[in-house]
Image (cartoon, rainbow, N blue to C red):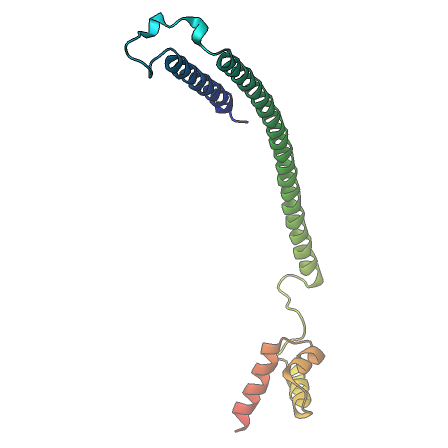
Length: 178
């Protein structure tokens, strides 16, 4: 919980107590003749004239206000502890997730390295995958499959060439035979 919360609670309690004090002064002022007969000064009003019910009511009100303030403070302390526990748990989870993310990134980099090594091992340095599309026998195979009516994708799979290479061979043959 934020450190200013305790100060806020203290200020709230002070505000409640000031309000109660003002209320008490207003009640006493009214009962002593502050709003009543102006011919009799307030200092001459005997204390016996203050109704006992009013005094008892004010005292009960003050006691109740004190109980409420204490309950409010206890409740606020409980909320403060719960919030601190929750923040601690969230911080731990965040640290766990950050650790998991870092390990995942490391595993990804390692996997990319392994894949790269496997790709290099499958073909020697400088070698290309599949047959040479410029070789006459490869060209003849592609054209023969095209005359049979196979699609470019089917020809690429059967001849172990890339789709673009198959298209290039077929398009070149069309250009030269016209």
